[in-house]
Image 1 (tube, each protein chain N blue to C red):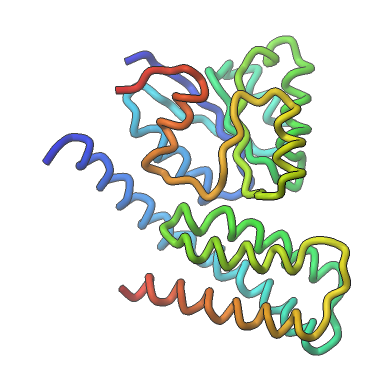
Image 2 (tube, rainbow over the protein chains, first blue to last red):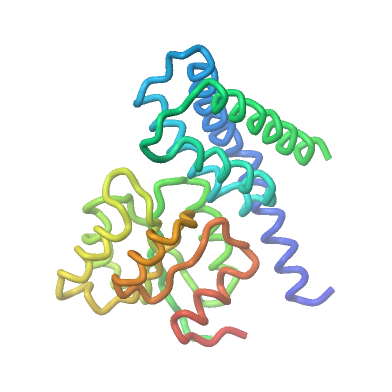
Length: 114
Length: 127
């Protein structure tokens, strides 16, 4: 095996290990967005909850692809687009967030269990 | 292979660790960390790194503000700074382009190719 290939495998293994150690942080971020989505559907979303969810979706968008979940980054970017900005959000936006969150959970579960 | 010291600043633990793993693939590259905020300037003063990799979006002090503080300090103003950003907004990217970063790199990044991107941005040679 070439040195480069061996090095790449080592880096991938270390990244996978960090994912296992730190994935609870990702799941915390997902949970924060889920709280915002549920509150939006219930008509009780506060600016603080929205702001927190926007920050968490931005973090996920920037991180998941690095861990080998490019689709996770794409989905997180969609949520960030909904949550960021000053425009009013409606129940339909909450439902859309819930759908994206479901896809994101599936994505993370499918790779974790593969 | 010449030795290089790189100061990495990111508020996300997991990203800091991956940046370190990625950059330390290169023989002679050493990564040191600083807590986001005023400590970055102190750490840069004491470590005198060859480059700084700075996250754009940090709660304590964001990347552009940190960069301006580094530029205002005579002992850190010459250190090249690379900004890492998860933003895809044109207005953000235009704003970052005006600061004078050595490069603005996108998140998510590929840990296997990050060293080459950094080397290219800084004119460093890697094998």
